[in-house]
Image 1 (tube, rainbow, N blue to C red):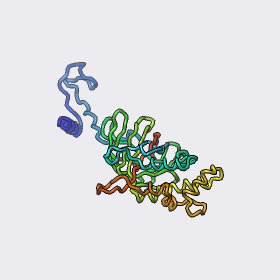
Image 2 (image 1 turned 90 degrees about the vertical axis):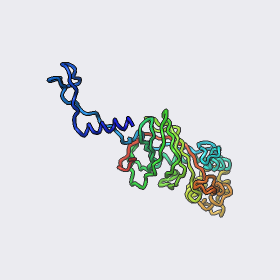
Image 3 (image 1 turned 60 degrees about the vertical axis):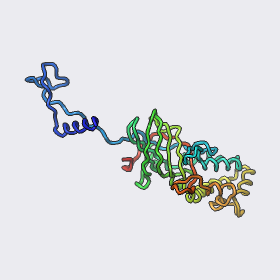
Image 4 (image 1 turned 120 degrees about the vertical axis):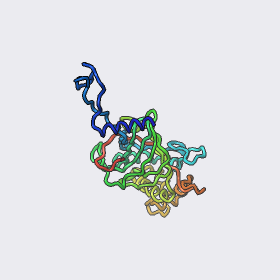
Length: 308
């Protein structure tokens, strides 16, 4: 109440333009105007109080790390005390069956080559609740990105920063998987971000959530098929890897690996369709858990579509 009263008084004084000063003696007026006829004259009103949020960090994701098991880069999304990350289970399965296929290296290479990056805006004040929004930006130069339209903006997620660590509340957002240019946009439910926010961007970032099974089966299967097919037709690929890919994914022996074959594969089909998170609280799992790590570097956006 005292803060509100002070604010109202300040606003009232600003509306009046000036504040009459009390009586003075020579040399007591600091700063000017000097004491004249027992008065310091008029002093400027206090500065208006800034109540608007401000962006304290705007950065572009420059590195993404895949989990290597179901516990790494995951969080408990359903309150059962167990870390959830179905993506990690999928990556671990593929690594066991295809030890010479480095999905992490492939992801890093594609991310570095892509002009599209995920932009994070953290808006608020240090030590207070903050808001986080993400955008898909297209690179203009090394540190500037164009936000082409408002449709690229995700719903705002609330959070807080304490001792430099950002944690967000449970929310919803959009995520672009950077396995190819113009990659699929997935609805990430129960999305959460944990990261260290510094002047150099975000470090030790973790993005977790749950992807609806229909989207996982459609989009993730296609992205995975694209990568596995490239590995399959690579003329320098290890012979054992080619054989494993043929047996595990080229189910119709046509020298191609398609999304339908990834969905039908005994290795990946079940993991892409088996929901482990109930996002609509109807008692039935409807999404698969998802978690990965990231870092980001400061950037600028050449667009008016920023967090407000």
